[in-house]
Image 1 (tube, rainbow over the protein chains, first blue to last red):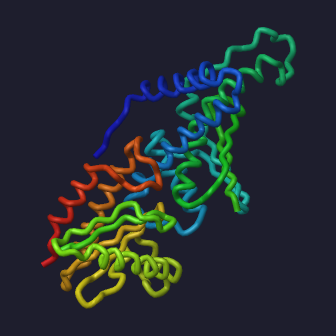
Image 2 (image 1 turned 90 degrees about the horizontal axis):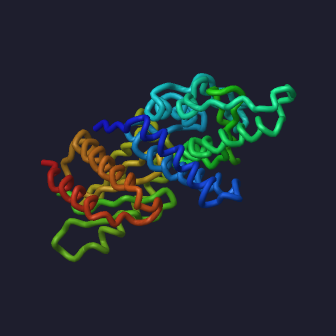
Length: 173
Length: 140
C-alpha cells in the first residue's frame, strides 16, 4: 500500500505550522513555539517509525538504527538518502543532507545593511533564526523515530549554507 | 484455533488483549500471556540459544503447555505480540504470516493521529480486523 502526499501540500503545511506557532500562538516566546513544533514532529516520527521498521529485523546497536534513518527512512520521507554521516563513536552522530528538501525552496533575502561583511549582523541572524524555526519539525521527527526504537536522544540542526543542513544527534547515555 | 492474542508495549504494559473462546477462561489465558513475557525477555537477552533467528521479529514457539502453544513476535519498537493457540500441529510459516498481518493491523491502528502512544488500543476497527485475521487462521 503506497499513499503519497503532494509535496506542495507538505511544504504549505510546514510553512503554516511555523507561521501559526511562532506568529500567533506564541508570538513572543520563540522557545515555546519551537518546543511545540518539535513535539508535533516527535509524534509524527514516533508513528512513522512504527510503519517503516515493520519488515526488518531488530537493530542490534545504535549505529544500525542511525543507518536506518540515513538510508531507508530518509528515502521514504524525502526520496533521497543522507549524504554524509559522521560519528565520534561516543554517542554523537552528524547527519548531513546537501539538499534538504524542506529547505530547498527557502531563500534568504540579502540584508539591506550590506556594507558590513560581518556575518553576525542583525539582519542575517534574524534570517537564520527564521530558517531554524523550520528545522524543529524534522528534528522532532528524528527524535521520535529514535526514541521509539529505544534510543533516547537530543537532536539539533544547523545550517551553514542553504540548502545544506546537518542534524546533530546526541544519544543520552 | 487461536484462543487469545495480545499486544504488549515496551514497558510490558498491556495495549490490547483479547480472547476468542466461548468458555469462561479469560483469566487463565491472561495468565498464560503474562508468563510468556518472561520467556520473551529471556529469548531477547540470551540470543545464543535461538541461533540463526538472530534479531528476527518472529520469536517462534515460546513454550508449549498441555493444551496450548504460545508464540511470540517482537517488533523493532519493542512491542510484543503474543498468540495462544490450541492447535498442537502448527507450521511456523503460517504463524509467521499470521503475525505479519497482525503487525500490519497494529501499525494501522497506532498510525491514527488520535491514538495516544502507550495507551490501550480502543479502536473498534482494530478489534474487527484482528478478529478477522484470527478467524482466517486455523492451523490444520
